[in-house]
Amino acid sequence: MIHGKNLRLRAIEKNDLPHFVRWLNDPEVIAGLTIDWPLSLWQEEEWFAGLARRPLHERPLMIEVAQNDGWLPIGNLSLHGIDWKIRQAEVGIVIGEKSFWNRGYGGEALRLLIDHAFAELNLNRIFLRVYANNPRAIRAYEKIGFVHEGRLRQAHYANHRYHDVLIMSVLRSEWKQV
Ligand SMILES: CC(C)(COP(=O)(O)OP(=O)(O)OC[C@H]1O[C@@H](n2cnc3c(N)ncnc32)[C@H](O)[C@@H]1OP(=O)(O)O)[C@@H](O)C(=O)NCCC(=O)NCCS
Image (tube, rainbow, N blue to C red; front, side, top):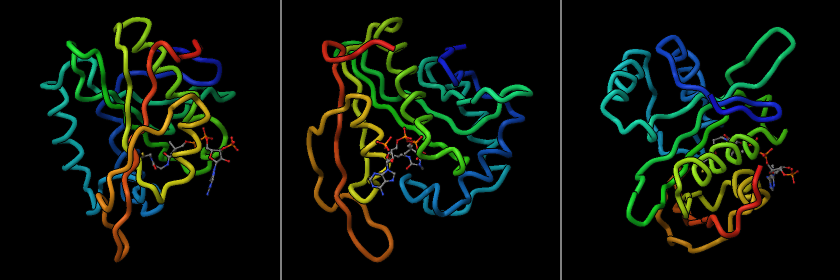
């Protein structure tokens, strides 16, 4: 497991799936994601079965926050599209428990994973895509050191209109260690 001050990142288990079904059927949670259709438990079970075929380092991790009586799952994050020649990966995150938004947990979880990606996986560049109409996410990424790199105009569509997609990245040479 990857341990931080308030959080830990651990592998996902099958009995975590009901959390995902709840989180990923919440319109507020998925507004920043690519999901635009209701998801059932069996679909999540199919997704989970497919994880075994994904490269180890691209399997998502559960974000858990320390509570008085143990660890509470609040979301997940993952690296994907790892390119071992360019030494880069894309990162994605969702905090599904909305009561934990705006408390620094998204930033802390990303910092833990990215620190691990630089320190242990020897990656050099981490980038992400974020919808321009997701100011919370943009702010969370800026706070931990992501810089704006580009804008894909009208590359997302939701709620009757097009939105731009921003590309942000952080390089290992710029990274402030956890
Ligand atoms: C995006 C997400 C991961 C961020 O995690 P988080 O724990 O809520 O973020 P943090 O607390 O680390 O940082 C959020 C920052 O945005 C700020 N913020 C919140 N709403 C804002 C708004 N409407 N405009 C500007 N800033 C805003 C917060 O105040 C905070 O900044 P501060 O610490 O300077 O006050 C989380 O909210 C989430 O999972 N949302 C739903 C799924 C999603 O959008 N995922 C990202 C896809 S790219």
